Length: 314
Image 1 (cartoon, helix red, strand yellow):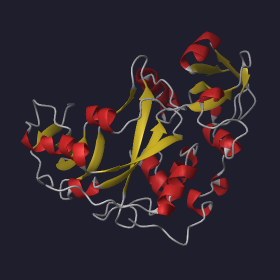
Image 2 (cartoon, helix red, strand yellow):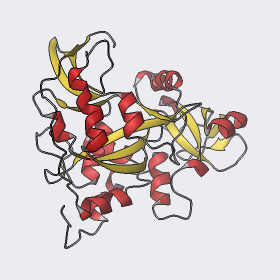
Image 3 (cartoon, rainbow, N blue to C red):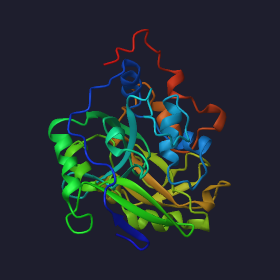
């Protein structure tokens, strides 16, 4: 745990019965259609540039929901909770993610986790790469219920309460551990998940002292330098690293566009994205990744998915 963090006992005891299954055909259709959706343009539209939950806000907005919602009700028709999971590829082993906030301490985490749509988003590109529905039942429920009898400090419970210091006050909330998510929620493999260098990314965000994510450009096998998709200036990169890692840092030489001199840059291998170049949505994905989507061009996913007459509620 970092400075200013303290773990507290769970306030809500686990349920003794499995959660009833809740499903919705409309939500399933939205989740299926979300593959390959770049969240960065919507995040810029609905949230502050440095807001921690801005990509979760963008996901809510794309699904036709209020982007800034902290209600005790479940996100989708008070039936299913939506959770965005930001993940990345390790050099060796399975995919990885950080711990995930469930809800504030005043809310019942077991109800929030009763029926969940987990939406997987690549950490570097902020592109949706997959999803999964779960129900708090059977082994899944048992694995989380064990947290009730575990010491929050020394026994690594899968569900825990963490009190963060914010503005000289505590803001306790329930969290799921990264280890539990990796074991019970994350897939073993997904196209579109890139290796992530946290140290480089953090330093790159300090470029220009504006704390903004690096600008990305798609690579389709061209030699260095690559023409910047925003200003056509040269982007120099190391091709061997790009082939091995799927991405590489880039140096933007003159001439520079208005924003290009204020941001760090990276090149990513386009063949590793979750959509093929001939797939529906490819051009929107490429524009979103390369920062070429104007605010008035951001299309809401819920406006593109026909709502079925029968939601087939379970």
